[in-house]
Each structure stands twice: as structure tokens, then as C-alpha cells.
Length: 254
Image (cartoon, rainbow, N blue to C red):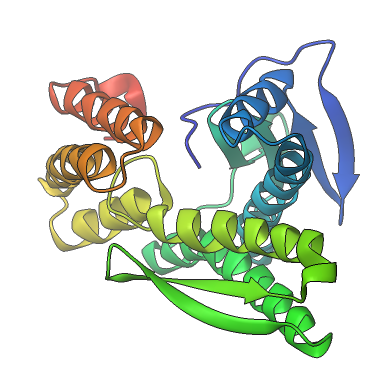
């Protein structure tokens, strides 16, 4: 989740309901996804990338939403330029809107359920690939980050491209999403745990951790991965955390 709040609706939004959960897709989601996929320089790759990202982010947000619903929340999902956001709709108690409060443990499980849903989808992709005769292996990105890879015969090259696109989006970005950088899921987990251990300074310590982690990831993205998008993303998130650290009580972080 990269959004702090829901973007305003537009007439071009795609709206539907999935498993009883309302979903809204902002038009800028498609634009940003297409821009990211266009860097491959392949039309086939782009046509695979866009639906793979859409399905993967939707599955991720459904993981959050279903866990929220398990704990009495009324979830809704928005996909936007920054990724996705799952939030709780208030229900009315008399004439007052009410949101069911969550325990720190429930908040952590909700945050973990998004990447967890993506990892489960990846396991399904690998299982299907193995069942139809494909090979499943693991490669190490930068020598430390394990990423699964699927291979097929020459005649099934497109199937391999589809499978590996899903694995890249769900495994790589799932792991990235667990880093302690706000507002990624890992940043939310760090905030919850640090506030629980230190109610007075926990929120600020979480922001300090987010600034440091975001800065390190920005440098690593540029130097080690050679990916300016990753560098800009984490640089922006580190800067946002720094701004919050300067003191904005109305931000919803504190």
C-alpha cells in the first residue's frame, strides 16, 4: 500500500464488487502500470505486464481486505497511481459513524496478509507450472534475495513469460513491501510494534527507521539494481517520512 488516503473518484473509474468487497480502479493506475511496463520495450511483455500487475495488486489488497473483514471491519479497495489502498468503511451506529477498533496483533496480521496473499499466488503459479511439465528454480538477486523462476520448453515461451512476470511482481515487490518504510506494509508493522513497546516515542522511532531504511533502499536501487524508479520511489518515501518527523499531528501517523 503506497497511498495515505483514498484519491477522489472520477467519472473514468472502474468499479466492481469482488467477494462482497467494493473495488475502485482509478485511471492513473493504468497509466502508471503501462509506463512501468513500457520500459521492457516489448509489446507482448507490456500486454502481459498490465494484467499481471492488476491481478497481483488486487490479490494483495484482497489479502488485507479479507483479514480486515475477519476482524469486523468493512473493507474497500482502491487501486491508484501509487499501487493500492485497502481501508475500512465506517458503519452507522445510530447517527454516528463507527469503525471497529483493532488490537496491535490484528493490525500486524492485516499488514502481513497482503504480501502473504501475493506469496500464495506465486506458490500457485509455481505449482501449476510444475504440474504441466515446467521447471521451477530459484535465482539470487544481488546474491542474497531469492527469486523463483519458471522455465518451459521453447514452444511454451509465452507461458514462461506470463509465469515469471507474476512471480516477479508478487515475490520481489512482496519482499520490498515488507521493508520498514512507511507507508509500506513493513512500515506499518514497524509503527505498530514500536508504539506498542514505547507509546511515547514509538511513532517517531518508526519514522526515523523509515527515513533511514528508505534512504538506504534508494541508494541500493540506484547503485546495485541500476533502477532509477526504485531509487526515486524510496527517496520519495524517505522524504515523506522526514516531513512527518518534523511534526504534523494531523497526518494520521501520530
